[in-house]
Structure formats: structure tokens, C-alpha cells
Image 1 (cartoon, rainbow, N blue to C red):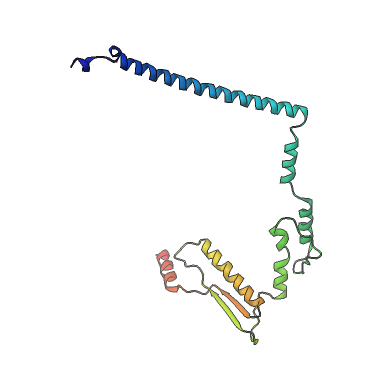
Image 2: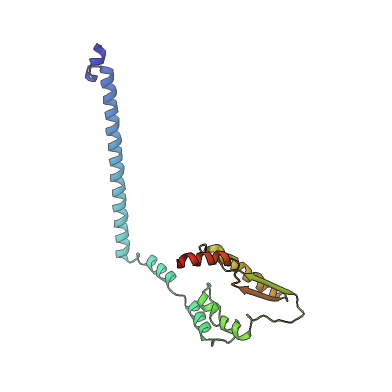
Length: 193
């Protein structure tokens, strides 16, 4: 019972452990503080070096390089302007219109769609002796939400139909054929109630 009532200060072994633990904590805190001070000093030294470099005129070189990279390339701008100069519905000759260094949808697709329509590339040629190829595209169900799969499916079908047409088939891609009329009717009736 006397041992239970005895304080830590009365036990020299426990007091030594407590003092060692306290000293260890203080040493860790001092090391952490010294590390923080060293980091602050290093940052201050780097900032001073940066200011000295800018004062000497050497600090703007990096900024000029970055500005040049983010600016519009003159060759790309010339290619875009040449593509836009082609009248709508006219052929954009790749030998005449310069090509940009990087893909630019506005420049690449300028005038092409109208020319394709004018040339009738979207119209099927019916009644030929060519083999037939047809894909019917059902619209997305009104009962669900649109997602990336719808766009992917249509892109793949478009590619297949174009490939078949270029391969000599009489190809037709029919969009929007309803395949879920009953489900659509139920959804519409519920929304009208």
C-alpha cells in the first residue's frame, strides 16, 4: 500500500526516466526550431540572390522565354488566315494553304464542311451495282442520361461508314430510328400527368 501512495519524485528511477523524457522532448523541439530557422535563412538568401540577379538585368531572360511560348506563333497565324481566306464551299487545296505546326480545328476544318456538302459527300448514291452497307443509329433512350458512350458509339459508326464508302460500298448511315417507343411513351405520359 505504501508503494501505491509513493509519488514519482520519491522514486529516483521514475524521476530519472521523467527527466530523460522531458530532456528528449526539449531537444527535439530545439532541433525542429533550428531546422525551421535554417529553412527561413535559406529562403531569405535565395530571395536576395533573385533580387540581385534582377537588379543586374539577368532576371528577365526566363520571363521573355515564357512569354514567347505562350504567344501565338506567326506561322500558325498565317496558316489560319490562309485557311479562312478560302471561300465557303470551295476546295481548300493543301498545296496552297500552309499547314500549321500544331493542330488547330478552326484552321483545319475551315471551309471543308461546306465543300463536302457542295460536292454531295453526305448523300447516298442509290441504285448502283455496288455492295450495300447500312448502319441504323438508334437515338439514346429518353429514360436514361447521355454519357460519353453515346458519342463514342456514334464516332465509331461514322468511321466505319466512311471507310465502307471509301472501299466502294453504297454506304448509308441512318440516324435517329426509334427503338424504344413504349419506354419513351411511358416517360412522356408520366411527365404530362
